Amino acid sequence: MLKKCMWLPLLLFPVVAPAATVELKGKASVTGTILAEKSDQIIVDIGYTVLAIPRSQVLKLLDDNGAKAAAMTAPPAAIPVAHHAPDAVTEQGFYRNSGPAAREETVRELVDGLGEAVVQVRTPSGLGSGFFINADGYLITNFHVTEGETQIAVEVYHLKDGQLTRTTYKQVRIIALNKFADLALLRVEDKGAPRFASVTLGDSDKLSVGETVFAIGSPLGLERTVTQGIISTKTRELEGTLYLQTSAQINPGNSGGPLFNLRGEVVGVTNMKITFGEGLGFAIPVEAVKYFLNHREAFAYDNDNPSNPYRYLDPPNRTSKPATE
Figure (cartoon, rainbow, N blue to C red):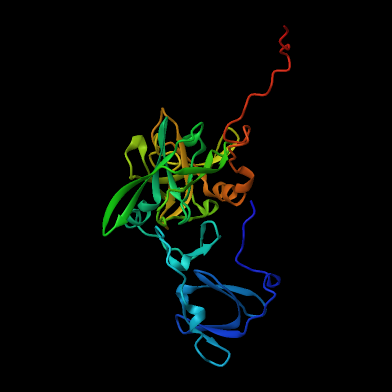
């Protein structure tokens, strides 16, 4: 599977900016050409390569005359983030991708910050879980949670003044569906909806068997339930698809919820369990989620297309004879 790396080709930036010195924490500095400034990092061309420097490591910027470039260090408007280590996250535009510097914490330390981004997805036929991937109300859940449904509601717990308040949003639009990967991309479009806390997507390829993980979801409708376990195997093949197998308890209602590592990153989307066993839960690797998001236009849901991935029509029966008068 293709991955985007941190090195940026110089040809992407035809306009040359003045040289500047980036003073870093730890009494270090980098001198080069500022190519771009993002919400969480500064892109610097140092001649033989291009560096992406986290803003959290920058003390100040100086131009080639030694003057402080105050305008270049102004931070962007704040966006709610469920658990955001500023030096460990890189922007992908539509979602946040993990970086190499994220530190591990305990489940107890992580759940309070992450819980606001995990939601309950309700339909007339049942319920599941989901999680916001950005502040604009886009969220991931399982295809089977929304299959055959158009009336979808999302219940969100907003944290305000130390208290959690449940809010139900009923204007939820289906953006994209992949039946075969069991993934759905939804968006909350209620008027007056706030900016939503969101999660960071990790790297399921870097998981180790035996690594601690935990799930947050709504098993049997019991919202904000946390279960902890380990990665039992990374390569459990079921019906031609590879899943993460985990000992974290997964039950009906957990479907579509996130599976986190101890860095607070989503490494999988929980979607099924073996009913006659215990501690045999499964999750879709987050790399499959990234592929779905990066190619979401190919899976776009369209109400005007009766044969889109949302609902397949039966093909015509060519053996049937035309009706005669």
